[in-house]
View (cartoon, rainbow, N blue to C red):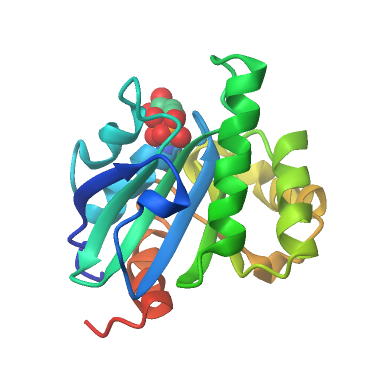
Length: 196
Ligand code: GDP
């Protein structure tokens, strides 16, 4: 098992221009309730690390967690967030897209998809948007433990089909059993060019 990543909350940024300097970044994107906080906490072995991204006022901000002095994981919450007005959602969507499209040092976009329920229409649209722009991304299917083993193979295929990708493109993870967590603890530093 790889050691937990020592992620530390640095700041929340409203726009691309407010972000702190970094050499390399990994963005984590997923709709609310997909299991993003649980997974981030598992990766860092912290109980409340990602709670910050859920505090009122921060659900539409880019929440930055440093890994090393010049690298960071940027938690992008509120994607498809229902509890705000349409105009607020649109403006957040635009700021998020600006960040994902324009941030030079963005090494990887981790897209979380609910492994239990599969991709939503919004997830599919977002994945298409990323592909159209050739933006580097990794799909992570969450809540692996919630998929009963008898149905697992079919569910995995359904998810892959729904995301319009192939099996090798999806990494399965569970914050409960730890499946996939080790892999992410290795891949995130690798994407960031950090040797551990
Ligand atoms: P977020 O809104 O994307 O940050 O999602 P949370 O991490 O808060 O998770 C949403 C709900 O799914 C919570 O009730 C979690 O306990 C549950 N959950 C998250 N990850 C897992 C997982 O890997 N397995 C199971 N069984 N439940 C999970």
